[in-house]
Length: 352
Image (cartoon, rainbow, N blue to C red):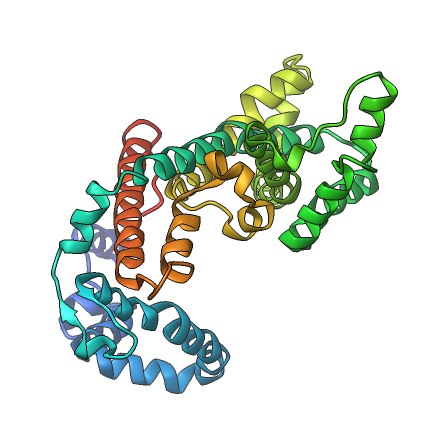
């Protein structure tokens, strides 16, 4: 009897319906993440100014460090944008912004009637295209080969030396070039004369202006751009190279099939930025290389605006110079947007 009763007890335990958890039975117990969800819900109910004030109180040291940069941005970048209103006026320094006559789009109409504008636009585009075609690939090639150097101290030394010219001012760079190319004592002309040729005044030849400008651009900027690509290469997974070596790939194979595709995003972003600067050449460098004998090839949009705004006979034409700059900026923005869309469509990479 006792044995039979024990069997019945075990059978009843087997057929007993499963006991629901306390959470399901009670219906009021909270999920482990309910507190976090509730906190997020309360945070979402707060307005943006309230969240901003709370964040400032929490991270006030970071905001304090950021304050000088924000003030500088407002004073020297955002503030002067308001001065673009003079492009729609016949601005006079004596009458001021608010007292000058409003002429609407007359200054922009003058741009399309100015016979000198096509020439400076062509010169600007040629310099920019040369910079993109010649200057843009050099840092990529340099960084690819630098990445293949196995001795770390050699790689770091070469990288530092290539980066140094970026910190040298344009005035010093142009002075060095002028000394090297001097028709009387420059090393280049000394070699030409020793070879039986005639001295060439490179800095006064219109045909030599663009090549010399591009040489200075390469010399001063390629080290800076190369650092961006080298930094991108540092993020490549080393196991990719190990797997390639196991499959018998040589250095060229790894360079073209691993390294180059891995930094393609950085290359596209830099290309978009370069296209955005197509109408923005280095004004300081051009003014230092500038002289009347090279006006035909050296005169670009910035130098033309500089002349009409500051070197005009009589009263400077600030309004017309501002209108030219605004139109240049609008065209550059359209170009950047177009290239950004193309990059997003074909390479799935975009800047904004």
